[in-house]
Amino acid sequence: MTPFIKACIMANEEISLALKDGFEASWFEKTEVGAGGDVSSKLDLFAEAIFVKHLGAFGHIESEESGIIGEGEEKIIIDPIDGSSNALSLFPFYGTSVAKVNADGILDAAVVCNLANGDIFIKSAANEVQQGKLFSDIFHAPHTTPKAEIGLFEKAYANPLLVAALDKEKLKFRSPGAIALSLAYAHSVNYVLFMGEFRIYDFAAGLALCEGLAVIVEADYVIVSKDKKTIEQIEALIHKL
Image (cartoon, rainbow, N blue to C red; front, side, top):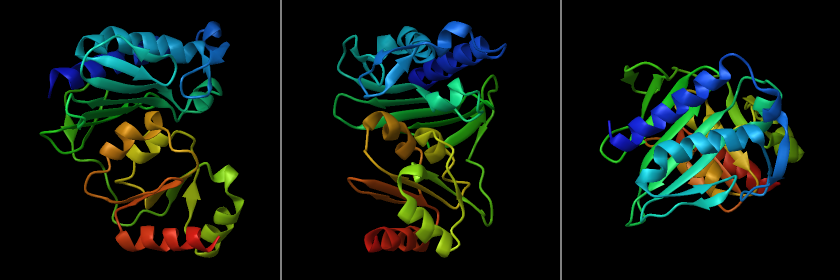
């Protein structure tokens, strides 16, 4: 395990410990529009500060909240809280997303953590995707199922025609509301689908964790699945709309 990934895990563990006894009232307060275009909460900024403390020595940070922080040849792309609306609604599907791009422009590390249940997914240039738990040294290949019954459709609320088309084809889904986390679970679910504006903070780490899966990335949609026929079926539905 690389020093960078160890630092990412330490940051996630620090955030997790801070959250375990409940959210501070101030974390629900909104501040201003962040670099990613959404209004940042004090929870977002709290988590961002912890990542800056742990990861700042590895390069400059590009955060969804504050934009460019620090300096260095390597770029670290972070979403301090993936699924902020979920977290601030106390809905247990939220986490963090970190990706590192080296000086040659190659993404060589990715870490996505589900703070709600402690699942953490890691990927380095030298190793395959691994899944583990916070506060544990045990990692393994991502969990999978012989026949997953649901997919994950992020931003389903904004795409009612595709929702109807998926329902007609009996392609069941849930829409949990945290893109990087949904991509991290792509090895276990039937498919992951996103339709909307493509932002690097949402996808850099998540897509890196989809190694070995069938992936389609276009300007306004992303589809991931273990089964190439499934993503081709979904893409055909999109083109019919």
